[in-house]
Structure formats: C-alpha cells, structure tokens
Amino acid sequence: MPELPEVETIRRLIHPVLVDRSITTVSVTRDRMLRRQEQPTDFAARLQGRRIIDTSRHGKRLLILLDDDLTWVVHLGMSGRLSIAPRESEAPPHTHVRVGLDDGAEFRFTDPRTFGYTVVLTPEELGEAPSATHGPDAWADPPSADELHRRLEGRSAPIKALLLDQTIIAGVGNIYADETLFAAGIDPHRPGGSLTFEEIERLLEALHQVLEAGIAAGGTTLGDSAYLLPDGRSGEFISKLAVYGREDETCPRCGDSIVRDVIRNRSTFWSAGCQR
Image 1: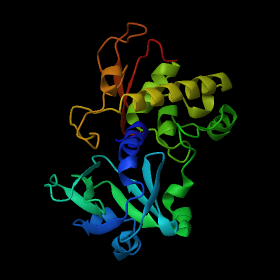
Image 2: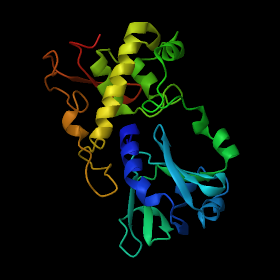
Image 3: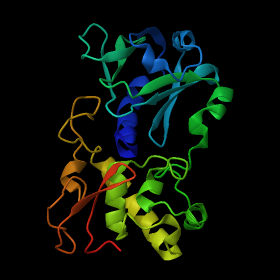
Image 4: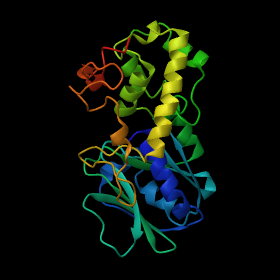
C-alpha cells in the first residue's frame, strides 16, 4: 500500500502542477529516503535547476521525467504520501523530502515508516535498477493471456503470491490481488500453474476492471489513513471492496462467510463458496 490505483491517482493530480516547472531547492532530512541513490549527494545535485518534462508511472513507481534525460523515481512504500503546498506553509510531521518549484510551490514526500524511497537516475542507471526486472504494468500495459500463461506455466506457488510478484506483473498489491481473484472466482491458494487458459483470460479481465474501478474511486484509504490524496482527501474504493478486510461478513455473491487466510505471510480475504 499504496498500489497501482493510488499511485496513478496521485500522478494525475500532481501532473498539471509539476509539468514545465523548474526545481529551485532540494531538502532531505532523512538519509534513508535516498538509500537507492548510489551517491546520495547526486540526488540534490541532479534535481537542482532541472525542468520537469512529464510524469509517468510503472507499477507502483511514480516516474517524473526531467530534462537532460534524468528520471526522478518515487516509491511510496507502505506509508508514503505526496503533497504539493506553498513553500512557506508548515509541512506535516515526517516530511523527509521537500523540493521547491519556481512558482513558489513545494513538492513534499511524507513517510512516517520510511519504507518509501526516492532517487534520480540516468538512463543507464534506470536500466540497471532492480525495478528494471519488473513485468508489464498491470493496467497500462497488461500481459496478454498467452504471455501470462507462459509466465505461470509450471509454477507451484499460490496464484495470490504470484500476483504480488512484481517481476510477473507490476503494480498489484494485497488489496487489489484479493479483489481481482474474487471477481475472477479463483481460489487464491491455487498453484499458478494450475490455471487454465480460460481462467487466465478471466483473471486478466477481472484485474482490468478492478484496477479501473480503483482508479476511478481515487484508490483505497483504509482505517489507518496511511494513504491520502495529495489534497488530503481519502480514496473512496473502500466502499466498493467485496472481500478485502471483510472477514466473517457475508459474501455478496454466494452468501458464505468471507474468511481470512495467510498466504506467504500476507493476509488474504476470500470466499470459499464461490472461488474455485
């Protein structure tokens, strides 16, 4: 958390504020946020004076494209939040990265748990980064049924765990994996290699529909409010969740109780009555 719908929602909101702006100041108060930058001093040096050309996203990573062929990468981790505010306004606690823009606004990265990170990479570094092994984006560029069938062939790991494997398909986390498997009617414990071609087609269709709905609702803000939109609003997809977080509630499709299991150390919510 945040997952693909949350990061896409954030990107859409900050895009018009960032594009064509120049960076005037850079402040980092927690070195851990720069742990992916080989030389931490490169972060501020590469940002200072750069112009923001565009924004993009791959999986859970926000990509801010700069002049001089640099890419500013932001990963929100478990509790990261982005906001843009007047530079003179008070920043929230745990705001570890502040980047000033030439119009007086300030980009802020707040992360209480510091599982998130940010880094500015050259094209060569971007191609060699761990994220370079990530699979196709689950929403913008999903794999075909043929490709996903090949990726899952022979895999004994549970399909829930494989949906979370970013090298197979990028952007899906715990919430949207559970919701996708419910929508597709697939038992999350099933070995990935056991899925038929028709089930994989159904899975991909469900994944697109769930992610599309998540983006339309602005993502999912849970009770801990770890994820909020840049303007402080909550994502509204929580009201549309069919199974995630609904242990012991009635399944909306079959009437059985929703159960919570743990699969590869991740809570998994599903309905045994209609997920096969």
